[in-house]
Length: 249
Image (cartoon, rainbow, N blue to C red; front, side, top):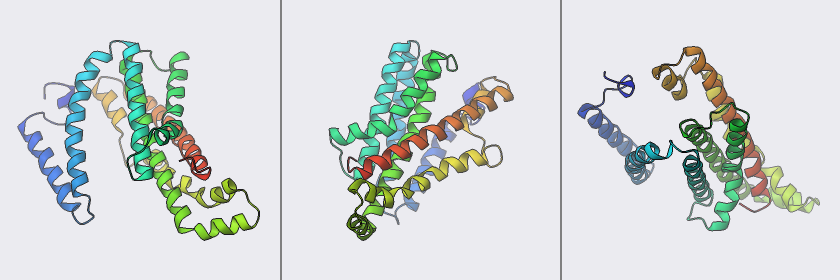
């Protein structure tokens, strides 16, 4: 082992072979579910995007303005991904715009406030990873909530009609049916927070310890990340359900 990167895995040909074999296993297993092609695409994209990320970060982390622009690009990509998942088709500009609300706005506001009050250092090396973690979680929550809400409205269309016949407004009738979708989308985050330290040792904790921080500082940082994820996810789920109920998403 000759560096922090080698503290978890040994970088070398054996690692490359292991990654390829694991990808092949995932593809073979996912053939039955029809997701083999998606698995191949996801694996290849991960390789290309991580290589590009490493190159870009080496430049932008030195400048706060460049880091802010990079976060905006990440936010746009996250909104695009959620819009595509919810619609299960190529989204238009309007759909992406509405997804910016639950996916990006809570994260951007939180990061800006944390920088202003001094909790988060105003450096790219701190801003980009924090924003990335929060954006990724908000993206997943928005996608799951939106997709589940639409499924509920489709399968329970009769109940929506019944609610309308009782005098409820369209938004209220739809919200009555799809509101429970938010609860199920938050379960993974809640379970992750409950199980931290008992079942899982999160990446932020491991990364800080390997980087030389004390275990107490790493624990404090990980707690901040987990609670931040819960807050951002809760807002994302709430806003997504409201937008679906209003037929805007």
